[in-house]
Length: 80
Image 1 (tube, rainbow, N blue to C red):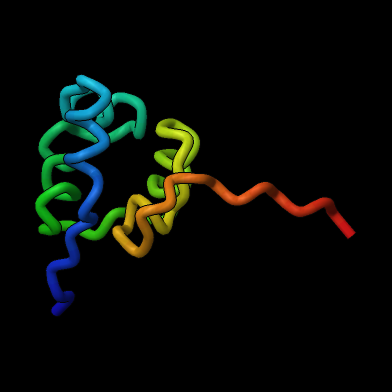
Image 2: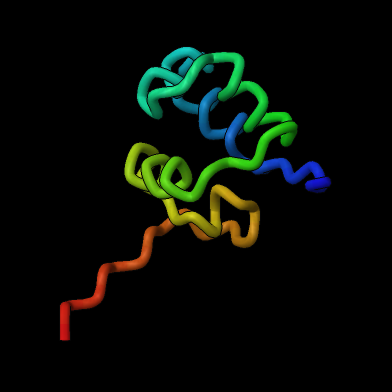
């Protein structure tokens, strides 16, 4: 059984940007009820959704996950 794992900043970012859960659900291609369960930690946020949200909010994944207070997304490295 998976442990509940909330994504601390999902609600904060949504409210800060004056959005409703239905807006994010539509952007991610899921139901509003499913998105709600990501915010509460009842469901784990899929990695592709986390990546999409970093671009949507222009913040780092670490910020969304609550691992840092630095909002900046890292600059992509050039292909070697």
